[in-house]
Length: 421
Picture 1: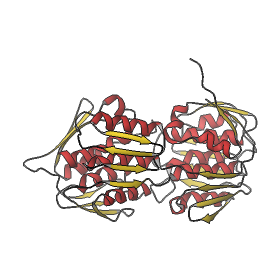
Picture 2: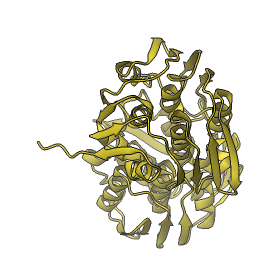
Picture 3: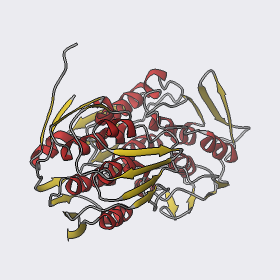
Picture 4: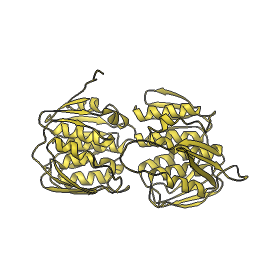
């Protein structure tokens, strides 16, 4: 658990780690290449360790030096992904596209991950079927193989009913080694999609349009080795910007891509803060009088659902009435009850959270319900009067590298207590 003593101002500079959601999919993408791949700026997180275990179970040889992974996937068995690991990590399912493209066959369990709502795999399956794969699910295992006398997937025109990040990533990977051209319409536009496309192109893939709603992939016969850095984590960066705002502190957040944070910065400024560029990769948060605003989560480039909980903590101590509407995941308001324990005035109706700002929160024992909720409770603890105890750190450790150490470096009074069983 974490013990947090609130109402301590922060100051200084924090370096943002590599993006978890990008690193995980690039690790899956390494399966496309029979030669060695090196990934740098990989965060040291529970989810990354799980993905290493999954790739190792498939036959990969992986060595880790600091934040660099050297990955060798020459000898892979595409049908032995272990259920006990895949069930804990949703991103591991995205390996289906890479494995099917390279080997023509794959067997992988249905995925797990945070319990924040339905994240169906139908879009992945429909897209792979359009590319000539036979796909069926039996006893919780997805089986897929290239049909007929074809040895490779076939290029296709695919329309996604929803701009799913995972489905877009799966189909980009599948299309890199397919025969012919694949066009993905209504594709997700997140920075992590662009990072995957850049990674694949660095290995010799032919992809254009990543970051727009139409991605065009011209299949190639094989890919080659690469040394590639993971982009910085825009959600971690946004979380630290909110930490400055909620504690009325001027801090600098560095190793970021400011263009990835446009909707977050816009809402911070609407709430009363200033965010100014200090350099190409550093942003300074200048606090102000906090006031209410409304937020609706949307696919990128809209406001990210992964920042909704953190902003709810901030709006809980912002003057006036705010409304947060969650449109992406139906179970992503479970942190409300824990914020209420700390004195937040929040009412929930359906996917709407109505927030009346209060002068201050009070420290309390709280339980994290998912990854981003855990960050929101830490932020609330930084702003609260007295001591807050946050339990459920297995969620936090899935997505934030050294969060308490980075906060201590800014002056926060926070420590991890290892409970005895």
